[in-house]
Image (cartoon, rainbow, N blue to C red):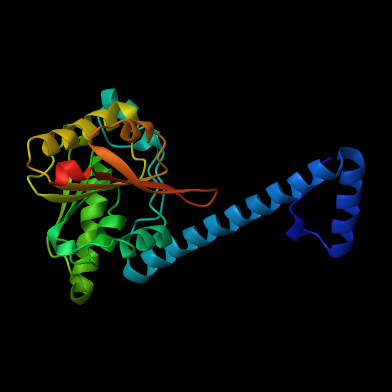
Length: 260
């Protein structure tokens, strides 16, 4: 028997469906099904709200950050497509704002780097904070051009809101991207690629720490599918983890021994 989402039914229908389901499957299975349906409804509602916020953000400022792009349509060399296993999808507005607002540090001392920066949404939001510099790294040539157009449009119209004036979008392979010679870095990852790319990205950061060129590296990893790589990295420690049906992200920071 199909047990529909509760909020789609009248009270009489709810009672009838629950009673019939309980007679057929028992109390425990019925309770579990109610919890599952309620959770699915909440996830669907929040996902829909996030999409609406993204569309409103684009419409209000004349941008293009919300529309998704399948991996088959990315504008990169064929032999590298396997590195971009995930299609382009933007970070939800509410999630990006929440993460940025919670950063408890002197932002002017940090360079913000978005690896797999897509159409530049997070770079725009990060530029509203006084970071020393914001850098986006994206392999897809089309996405890079869209990101640059979005940033140019937003910063030209709302220049008074921009607190970080140095915003750069680079068309590069993140696996080969040289981590800047800065002491303090925030590296943002919206699960942009698989472990084939993430391994050299992590290795590059660890080399920066080992040679003393970087002192404090904070990694914000959204939908951390390959977080085991960071969990096993000697130079990083997990400082925050949110893992539920609505939000999954991990925050790693270079160990204090590396920071001096």
